[in-house]
Image (cartoon, rainbow, N blue to C red; front, side, top):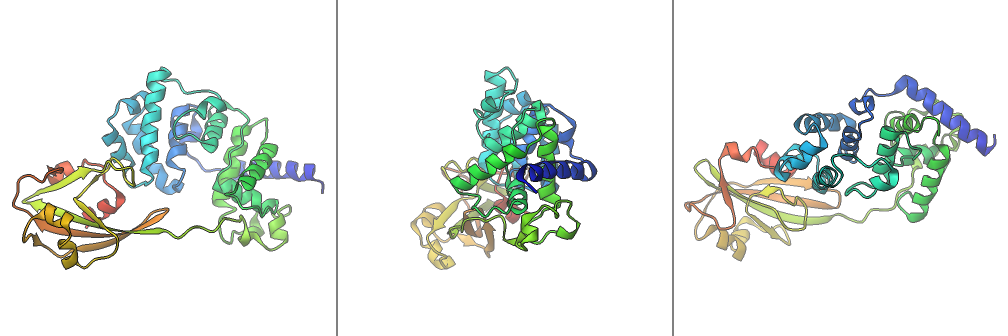
Length: 349
């Protein structure tokens, strides 16, 4: 079988599979770029099962790009809370303002213009361009990498420059110019539900006859990824300062994780100190004063993409009415603040 025949068979088999097995998703019933853009940003690092509720929350809270642009950042972050990667929510807000204020609420209609939007890379631009406007631009995400690496037996690491170029060129060669939107949706769905990570059900796969990884018994070895660096470990000590029902927090403004989210008074240490040693730290003494009434801490571990946070939440009764740099909130007010998933987990307890 020659290469042209394989490409043709791959495309037709994939689209035939999709017409039977496609998932019914709300953003597939529109060519409006706004909900398509929302769905792509939300789903970049999230499974559809989780992302659907966030998508519905965003389109109901911010039904238009102008509504999203006019909303306070705090409200946008609260709507995003729990998804992680909060820089994407900030970029979402900035891009909405860019479209609303600089473009009269009209989305760019070309791939090249879409790339100028903050937070929109090659994959997202290709998705919007094909789904909203029918342009011939192939999407390449984790699902696509997996399908192409297995079917065409590509062992080039997917994160390197050579790999990205090789997969992008192959994806462009495969896309069906007569229905680029259907093809892109098909390969994404196929990777998500059929050609899954680990050991997929290859014996019932419509592409098994042409899949080179299946023929060579190496499906579980592909795609090849680079070895990840060890995660950075950090030690966060949160003092949950309370007076009656009031609790103190501040907005996190450092150029670090969870920017613009709210947090309890924090003392970060280089290692996991005993509670006694922690309370002797100058930062803790300046915050709490002498002889604070400290209650039993709660330990939580939170894993992010590049770091592991070992958190200790320490309830403290305070007598002061003011803690410099922090604002006191009632429980009702606290529920409206955007906080990290880590702090949300503590509050759930």
